[in-house]
Length: 361
Ligand code: ADP
Ligand code: ZN
Image 1: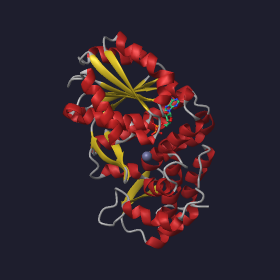
Image 2: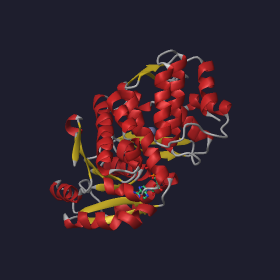
Image 3: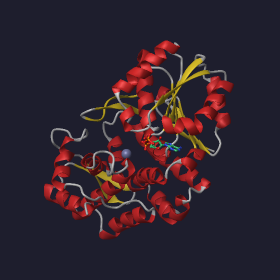
Image 4: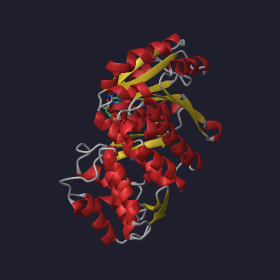
């Protein structure tokens, strides 16, 4: 088992990563002095596989757990779903010391975190992420949100969990495409801050694809470490945290252009990283060799490296509507090398369009 500490003064917490975290979860639930009544939020897929075992574990630690199941899928990240959960929380009698446990992927984590941040102005929140994407990204760092009809994650808060428990056994039932989606973010961590990690992914690609336990423990914990380090220097995204957006400007436009359903988030990130690397190469920030190394790793991990049937003009326009575009200026996260990125707000439109032409086949 590995423990990664997220250092945020009095909001600091631990991320536990391992193949069997039952005793860690039980001890934590028993020792935190939570109120007896707790709520576990999960989705309709995960409920069937894992909810019973986690609930009995929490009950063996002395908690009385109310389960709230939302339909699987992004549409559950809504204010109307949140309202149903508030009603259940009031009726059940959750108080300020009651813990909210999120058992699920990014959808459940973001929604449950939003409830935990707002119900009674905030109660203790615990993440038990079950998808690879949630394990290496959304469960770490404290961004919680629901979607608005006009855009994703527009209503939310920064709200840190009390702990994160990443059990590798969850990955066994995760659909292969969701594994690939998580790998997109994992490759991103190598590119933005750790060349050795990038090389490690490259050397172990085959084992990663078989979900080898010890390799997964290593790459998940290194990913969490890199994210934790960035977040502890810049909790509310005023500077450094923007580097986590590598590949995401184009990813968001891919997701939008394809109706948020054809490509998973991680797939869009993989292609978006190739787009950002293309721009970096055109600006002579990296050479062709580094560009190809990223493209090769993405192919080696059997992720997609281009998208189909997306309208390039539409995508180009949509990057200006991104949440992170300020005063019409896009902060591009670009590569200086494998392992280092920098922000550039002056990329010529023609180069951006060429990059879109490259990633859309
Ligand atoms: P994210 O990719 O942000 O984690 P979701 O929360 O929608 O997005 O999770 C992706 C899909 O994978 C959902 O359908 C969810 O129910 C399913 N899922 C999550 N974890 C597991 C798991 N361990 N086993 C099987 N299915 C899972
Ligand atoms: Zn992402």
